[in-house]
Image (cartoon, rainbow, N blue to C red):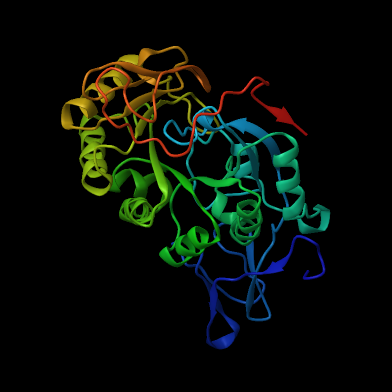
Length: 352
C-alpha cells in the first residue's frame, strides 16, 4: 500500500510492543495492530508504523469567503482556498457534509495534489489564506503542516474549521507550522458528546483555550439541534464555559440546524436562536451571533459599548464595514478583529 501517492508515513505516533502503534493526532489515540485502521479510517498500521491514507487526497478544492466558515472577526471580507479529504473522527447524525465525512478513502483510486499546487491556486484566485474544512481537518494533519508552512512563506494566513478533538501535541505542531485561525464546533454538553460522538467535551474546551493562549484566533460555533442540543440548560452551560475558557471577546455563533443525513427533526426555531443570542449578551459575551439565517440583524457586529452597527452582513457577504482602525467610529471602543478588511469585487466561490 505504501506505493500509492496518497499514502505517507505519519509524523505523530508511537510504536508499541507486538507491532502495535498508537496514533497521537486525534484525542481518541487509537492503538492499531498490523493492517488495522483507526476510528477515522484514514490511518493504518503498516509494519508497526502508522501511515496516513489521505495525503493530498482532496475531496474538494474551492475558494470561499472567510465569513462562511464562519469567521466574523478574522480578515473580514477575505477569501480562503478551502480543501478537504474523506471520513471523520466524529459520528454526528445530522452531518451536513456526510457525503464526504462518511466516505472512506481509497488510495488505489486517489491521486495526490501537491501542497505547492494548493498555494499556487490560492495566489492565482486572489485568496488571502487557506482553510481546511468540510470534513474534519485533522485527518489531513501531515498535509496541513506542509501546506501551512508553504502558505506562510507566501504571505497567506492558515485556518482550520474543526471539531477540536485533537491532541495538544498535534495542535502545537499546527501552530508552529502556521495555523492562524481556529473555528471550533462545540456540539453540546458532556452528555451530548457521549451520546452522539463517544467523546469528551472537556478536550474541546481545553483545545480552544490553549489555542487562544498560544496566539491563535478562535471562534466558537454552537449548532442548536432540535431535540438534541437545544435545551436551555445546555445552552446556558455552554455560554458559561465559553466565558470561563475564552473570555467575553471571543465570538460565539448560535447556528441554525436543518435536517440532514440521519437526523430529521424540524429546523431550529429562530426564536430559540434569538433567545440564545440574548442570553449570551446578558451573561457577558460581547460578540454573539446567529448563523444560517441570512439577513437576520443578529448576524451583524455591533459595538458592545454603544450599540453602533460596525459590520453589516448578509450571510457570508460583508455589506458594510464601518470600523476605523479597528475601533468603533462613534465611541472609540477597540474591537477585536484579526487581520484587515478586504473588499472583494469578485464572486463568492469558484469550484474546480
